[in-house]
Length: 64
Picture (tube, rainbow, N blue to C red):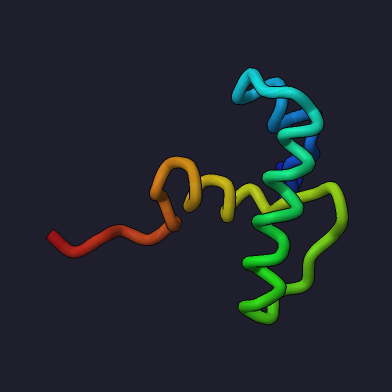
């Protein structure tokens, strides 16, 4: 089973950024999710949310 979360180290490697920047991105995104009443975990971010924020993919097909 695929892990549901990315860690800061995974984001840093994926995007070629520092781990400090990756932690900052996760912190900002977790604040957004917490405002929407999602449960968040420090230092981790939902893979689906990263796909939505970075790639614009939300897992649902858009009507054409």
